[in-house]
Length: 192
Length: 192
DNA sequence: GAAAAACATTGATCTAGTTCAATAAAATGG
DNA sequence: CCATTTTATTGAACTAGATCAATGTTTTTC
Image 1 (cartoon, helix red, strand yellow):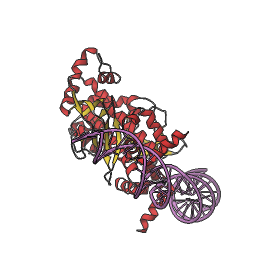
Image 2 (cartoon, chains in turn yellow, red, brown, green):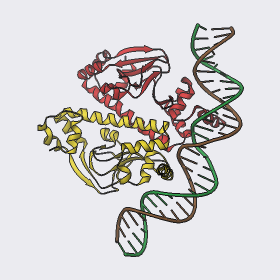
Image 3 (cartoon, chains in turn blue, orange, red, yellow):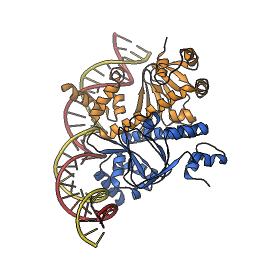
Image 4 (tube, chains in turn blue, brown, cyan, green):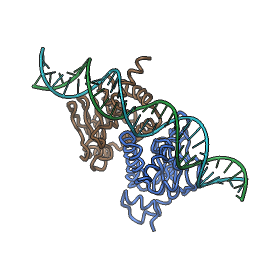
């Protein structure tokens, strides 16, 4: 019986089924209510988490105190401040649950133990970082080369269920536009 | 006698001096004239290169055929399409020299051989990817939260010598603004 | 060292997206 | 279930930055 995490692992690396329980033992399941802050700017990130339920945002705070959302992590995504976690140094980002959420988390120690027992998983973590990198590249490109309209269309393709789950102004923040303008985009679109 | 590459390595990982020549043997020095295309969209990236001289840009092409510059790599930076190189799959980015440039390059094979002889270098490559990731995060944030003015000021801090070395319209592309507007920003600034 | 190409500046006009303020509608919680 | 808070919509005025077109200035190239 495969958990979502094992399914995710399997698409990165081939493992014998015998390893399954062994791997799961290294992860600690945790639940958080909505609006729980998991990491504040300047703190050291103590977890790398695989989301099994809920929705979590990572964001920067700008000079006026407004959030700029970097990523949404929903079911089957990883969430962490990678640089802060890996080197145990202060983070520049914040992490907060949007919905009540469940994570399977690794600490620096449990990750190290996991990898020394199952070194093949190194590949999975490498791919995870690579995917994040590619995602940021594409988003930077989109923010420079595309209109808000098109960015929103791409967002809907990538996260079809999020608009039903989270407040619209968070999507505006992710897209890099004002909530008012997103409201107008949606109105325009519905007229067609 | 330390090469720039060895200096770079040393700030990531501590190695015995005995290893120095051994490490360098895995890198192949190559020179390119200016405006040489090292990677085209859709090709598989066959190198990871440490820049010892010159300046190289990585970029996407937008729907109108215009470049959007993602990074400049000058002396002591790494340049590659990380995802394409690691997994040997088609790239989404292009890489091209701006100035005549010299690189020390690794191929997938030579990198593997290097790492199996000097596994401590894994850490350096991990840090390299992490730094790229953090750089993209910050740039995305800047493009959403800051005015062109401030982005340009940050650019000047980060790359103080580039404005003297490369055409201004490439900087505009990197900043996500039109060349005309960058010209106006500079004029405004010089008036103060 | 002349001709061509690439690059930079400037002005005029336009627009995608912001900001502010007011109102309406949902969601939340005691 | 009422009161409060959070969210969404709409209008009006504004602005950062784009686009187009013309001119001037460097850099290349042969």
